[in-house]
Each structure stands twice: as C-alpha cells, then as structure tokens.
Image 1 (cartoon, rainbow, N blue to C red):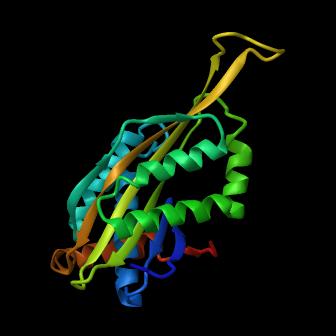
Image 2: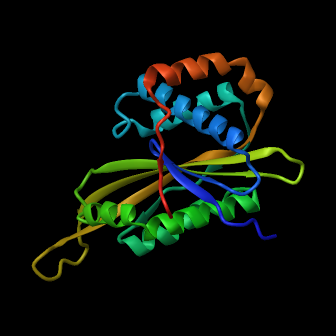
Image 3: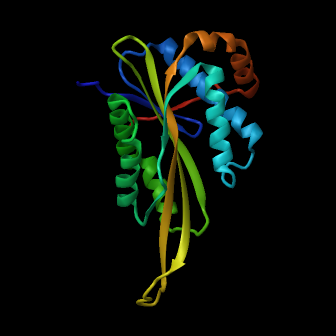
Length: 220
C-alpha cells in the first residue's frame, strides 16, 4: 500500500513525521502531547545524558496521561557500530521491529532522510571523532491514521554512547579502536482523544508556561 510522502519536523529531541490523512488540528494536538512528555521528563530527570534509561522511562510513562495507549513494546538488545554506514544500517534494523508495517516504513524513511540531511552531516562529523563516553539520544516518532480512522504512533527512543578500546592486535601508530553502542526503547501507541481531553487543560497550561509551541520545520 502506498502511504504517500511524510511531512517531518524536529520538535525538541524528536524527529516527528506525519503520513497523509492527519489533520492540522490533530498534528498540533500530538505535538503538544510530545512536548508535554519531554518537559515533564526533563523536570524529573534533569541529566538526560547520564540517566537516559530513567529519562526515557519517565517520558514513556507520561504518554498515557496525554492520551497515548500502548499497543506493543519496542525493545531490542543494544548493538555496536563503528561508522556512519553501520549506524544507518543498524538503526533501521531496530525500528523495523515496529509491529505496524506502515509505521515501520515511515520510521525507516525518516531515519534515511535524516542521515542525508545537513543536520546529520554536522552531527556525525563531530560524533565520529568518537570521544569516549560521549552520550546523546533522540526519538523517531512516525504518525499515521489507519483504515479505521484511528491515529497510530510509534515512539522510538535511540540512545548512542561512544567508547574507545584497545585493539586486540594493535597495528600502526594508533592502537585503539572506536565504537558506538545504540540502544532503542519505545512502543506503538493508539491516540485516544477521550484520555487526552481529561488532561487537556493541564497540558496546555504547561506548554504556555514553558513557551513550548516553537517547532523547527525542516526539509528532509
């Protein structure tokens, strides 16, 4: 089934993509929910780099408050890569575990487009110096409307940690090798408008106080 091209934007640490069929009002509602979760997680776990597992756990625990109902979990063993090409290949493998075929395809497309963008080139030119112990993370969040008219959303949190280690058989002038460990946590959710309406005022107030309605739209 041809899902059509997606519209992507960067929202905080999220790469959000919308497949055709989701209205502007529904998009804004979803973006508000994602920002609310990010702000709440940041308050509870200020040091995201050092405590990502706690941060992503809090982020995902807040999703039901905003109307996200989890259908399936997305967890996989961590993988190690040593260059940008391997990162692209392995990260696509990780998001391919998404149970919804349409969402998995959208997530793979968003990752592929991101890796080709100027944002990624700048990111990897710094990351592939492989400062040991360096940590960063982001979420890939594809959204689609299924045939029944319900909105489905996949939240794929990826964490990356680099380290330097001694080669088993040192060669040349540099006896070290580098690697990046990628960990994914997330799930597939259905968006329930009823649950959202219960906490709508709280969500909107948090966003107003935090000045959070600014998103950066990017061409991917």
